[in-house]
Image (tube, rainbow, N blue to C red):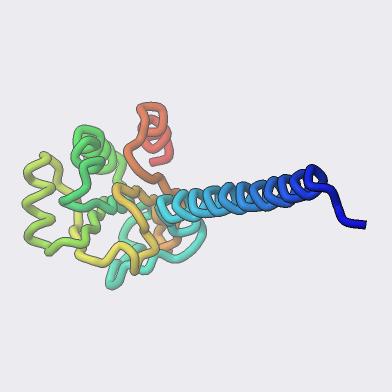
Length: 169
C-alpha cells in the first residue's frame, strides 16, 4: 500500500529536523572545545612550588631567601608593575633577601630596562623563560637557599597580593 503524500512529507521533515539537531549539537561541541583549548593555551604556565629552579650558575645558598623577578622589556604588565617592584626590591634589601631579575633579552638591555624603571637588583640573568618553566611575565618566585621554589606569583598583582608578597619575605 503506497504511503500518502502528507505522510512522506512529515517523515522527510522529521528526518531533516533530526539531522539539523545533530549538526547543531556538533557545532556547539566544536565551539566549546575550541574555547576550552584557547583558554588553556592562554593561561601562563608556572613552575610548581617545591621543585628546583633551573636557573644556571646561581649560588642559592648565598641567601636563605631569594626573590626572582621574571620580566621582559616588551611586557606592558611589567611596566605597569614597576612602582611595586621598586618598593619590593627596597624591602628585600632591608630584609636581606637577594633579588635576581631574569629576562629573555640581553643583559645590557635588561640593565637599561631596570635602570629606566628605577630599581636595581642584586643579579641580572639572561635566559629563555620557557626553559625555566615560566610561561608569562611578570612572574615572581620566592626561592629558598637550596634553590627550591617556595612561592609563585603570576601577572600584574592587585594591592592585596602585593601585601602578601611583602609579608612572605
